[in-house]
Length: 70
Image (tube, rainbow, N blue to C red):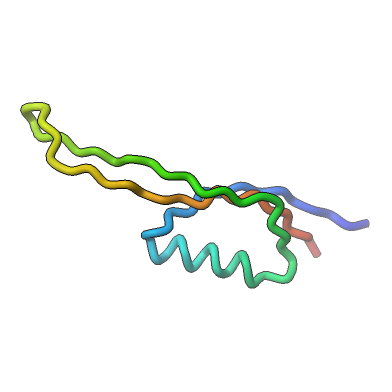
């Protein structure tokens, strides 16, 4: 009987460790990606007076995959 585990993870594209995990997922022959979408979020940082001091767009991969269990 073939057993499959479905998983989901959000990978931040500017984080090298998360991108290594994503590459490992792509290179794993036991894993099949079901769906992958790209999401953009805004990160904002404010000072103690409530003024915006930094704003950055961050890209994420939202990935659903199946992993065959042996």
